[in-house]
Amino acid sequence: MLLDALLGEPKRWHPLVGFGRLANRLELHLNKGSSPQRLRITGFIAWLILLLPAAALSYFASFSALGWLADVVLLYFSIGAHSLFLHARQIYTPLSQHNLADARHAVSMIVSRDTSQLNESEIATAAVESVLENGNDAIFGAIFWFLLFGGAGAVMFRLANTLDAMWGYRTPRYQYFGWAAARLDDLLNLIPARLTALSYALCGHTASALHCWRTQANTWYSPNAGPVMSAGAGALAVKLGGAATYHGQRKQRPTLGLGNDADIAHIPQAISLVKRSLGLWCAIIVIATIIRGAYLA
Image: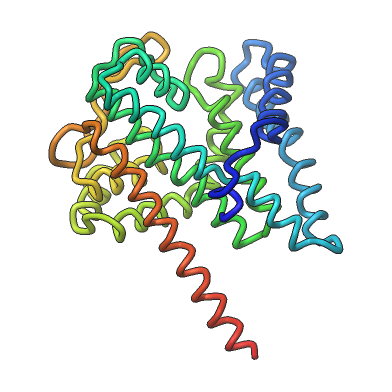
C-alpha cells in the first residue's frame, strides 16, 4: 500500500496493460459463431487460458526463496488506489473551473457511459459512482483475496475483474462470450463487496448507509455493485443513479442514496471516504496480526 501511495501505477510496462492487450487478441480470435451455448463455453475457456497461467506463476513465486518480496510486488501491481484517486482529481480540477469539455473527457476514462453531453451534476455523479465502485474493485477486493491466498489471490482477483470490465457487458458482442467473466467476477466479489459496503458505512453516515444498503442494494443491476454503491451513497448522504446513456441507449437507473444530487464537492468526499475505509482495513489487519503473533508466541 505504501508503494502504491508513493509511486502510483507504473507508467510503462504495467502487467495489466499487457494482459488487456492479450485478452483483446484472444477475444477477437475466439468470439465467433452464433450459438449462445458455444459462446458461453468459449468465453469460459478464454477466461481459463488467461487466468490460470498467471495465477500459477504468482503462486509459485510466493513460495520461492524471496516469496515475501514476490507477494509485495504482486499486491502492488494488483491494487490501484493511487490511480483511482488521481483519475478522480483529474475530473474534479476542470469541473471546479467549469471546464465541461475537459471534465467530460476525464470522466470518460473511467466510466463506460456516454459522457459527451453530461452536465456538471451528471459528471459529478459519474465520478462519485466510479470512486465508490472501484474502491472495491481496485483496492479492497484485491486486499481480501491477498489475505486469503497471498499474491496469487490478489492477482487472480484483479485479472478476473479486468476481464469483467472488458467482456462483462450485455451487448450483442459480449452477451454470451462475456457471460463467464461476469458471473465469475460476481462470485469473487461476493464477500469483498459487502465488506467494502460495511467499511463505507462505518466510515461515513452509518445509519443512512445501512438504511440505503438494506432498502436499495437489490434494486441495482449488479448483485455486488448494489451494496457498495448504495452504502457509499448513504455514507456520503448523496443521491446517485438516475438516467445515463450506455452504448447508444438511454437507461433510467434506480436511485441510490439520499439527500441532494451529486455536485463537485462530493468528489473529494468520496475519495476521503475510500481513504478512511482503507485506513480502517489496514488498522484491523495490523491489530489482527499483532494478536495472532501474541497468541502463537
